[in-house]
Amino acid sequence: MTKYKIIATAAMGIESLVAKEVRALGYECEVDNGKVIFEGDELAIARANLWLRTADRVKIEVGQFKARTFDELFEKTKALDWGRYLPVDAQFPVSGKSVKSKLFSVSDCQSIVKKAIVDKMKKHHNITTGWLEEKGATFKIEVALLKDIATITIDTSGAGLHKRGYRVGQGEAPLKETLAAALVMLTPWNPDRPFVDAFCGSGTIAIEAALIGQNIAPGFNRDFISEEWPWMSQEIWDKARDEAEELANYDQDLDIAGYDIDHRMIKVAQQNAFEAGLGDLIQFKQMQVRDFTTPKEYGIIVGNPPYGERLSDRPSVEAMYAEMGDAFAKLDTWSVFMLTSHEQFEQYYGKPATKKRKLFNGFIKTDYYQYWGPRPPRKTN
Image 1 (cartoon, one colour):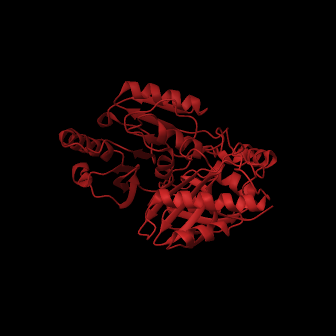
Image 2 (image 1 turned 120 degrees about the horizontal axis):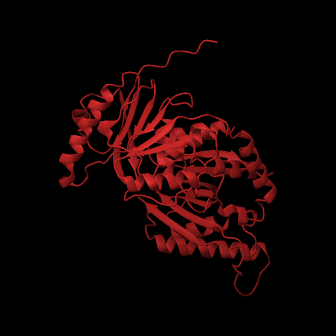
Image 3 (image 1 turned 135 degrees about the vertical axis):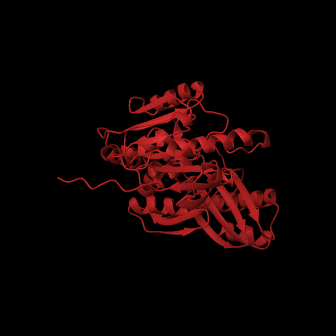
């Protein structure tokens, strides 16, 4: 098999989680802003798409070079080994972005990269007249310029990796599945401990916890654009999916619950959980956070509560934070993890966090407030 330079893109703040996942798949990697870079073959591409819970996309880097003029961009793009990646009938739309670079016209960069690839492909396949027939598999190419360095990649994922395929309904401000998985993975939760999402909405955090708890590959029930590619054979995908099936632990008992004030969202969450094949494993119930109580111990509460972004919503949101603090104060063995953009969250909750972590929920800058409870006692045999 051939070796490729693979890039797993990531939201700001969770690159280290993506790197941990890549290493768990058996690949050494390096971490950069917004991405994790590693080497691997075709099977590595399939595994990364199936298994990475917190990455946005998996891309192949075709080349990286300095480009300060359009001539430089054209010639250096043309010099790349496009015949290695693209069959003669490939469809290859080109997208682009430019940050702090002399070549700031994205549309011009896209058309120049497209023309350079066409010239190289015609030469590679000895085509002297006419156009390339773009009727085959799709290879989405991106030219990204940052400080005059051009990076040219091919997207192997297609739809973003947050699209797991189980979401049949959602609320007004849905949490991306990749971020929901990150919120779970940033806690010390394991399947032996109770898990609660106190603001479950469409159920994403609870569903991601269940997938983690039973070690189910998040991409198991969806397709990827690179499955169409002639050099990503069906045997490779079958092998990667067979591995995932063998590693899943469907017999793992889980104690996962989701609560929300809106009964309509409880129905949506239940539908999504059943679509994910986890409907019998997660208990969803309508409840206000102030009413939460439990005799269980050493559990984990994760939540993405309302932020009070609109000024008119702030008083009710701040009152709810205070009620939450009162309710959770009684759970002296539990750990609490809350994501919000409200900068005075700790003040209204009534307690300083053990630790805070900066994360982005889409374009909203948030903090993940972590309140660590005691560790559960070790089990004795």
